[in-house]
Image (tube, each protein chain N blue to C red):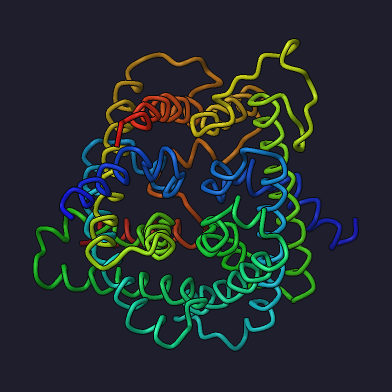
Length: 228
Length: 193
């Protein structure tokens, strides 16, 4: 298989950031009230991820190792600000629906996690396709979760009434905050039942488990603690 | 004046609970809620950092970004300031009060990546809060976070002793507990405020 296709397959299926690696839980739970919001959030993250991977990979020999995390954060924050301004100008409806979660892409673990775990070690072309794969994987997962919540919560799909209320009585709770937790719980239980291993169960076991960089700092800290 | 501050605390801590209705800080909410003691310490650290960072973010916005018309840079400025602030708090505590450092120390770096801290700073700006209101909102949000994580830790300690169906062991049962908590917290939405 072509190595670029392999990166995209890896991002969408094998290491899907949302379902297998369990990164970026906050936006996953928060914005998936409808399929459209899921796509919007996914695509804006995709855009940031592609460019952050690309820039970080190009600059990987220039950025000194000691200050790499602050440098990555500045790069990501600049890209997020650009996306934020573009969305404010061209898609005001989506912008107000996603609200504060757009600037919060900065702290999305997927982006810093990929920078730290992959983009700063490889050539720009591979980093680019990794960004495309991971971003698409995230977008698809958010869309599917959003679709499920929208359908169960209101009987709609992409804003169009699919089942009338006489046939299917909507379960409104799925469209509200608790529904996000419920859907994720059911999804992970299904994956567990099918013996597909995900990072979900490690996540609730340890430390923060948030992202590659963070998990690393936890490990090193624990060692420091035991030494002391 | 006092009434509106109490209103802000109740709203941020209970009605718009940061974890259960805003979905910020989910990572540490799920990750550090295994034991009651650890989650209480994390809660303490979050209250500490979030109150200070809300104050600093507000001052920066009012006296630096707004006069220079650089409001659009707030995301970049806030995330850098919060990251630096957490480091400084850590060093300061290490030197001055080793007791508190020992209790909160290992949780402080986790807070840098906690999206709730940045989220509160940005929400305060969006809502046009002044200095006192920002600090109170930061404190209230952090108290809400602490309430949620302590409750979840209590529930998880009980779950550990019961038998859970196999596919639901681990993450799913934790998420289900969180869902039930979220349903309970929705009740606060009907408070006549």
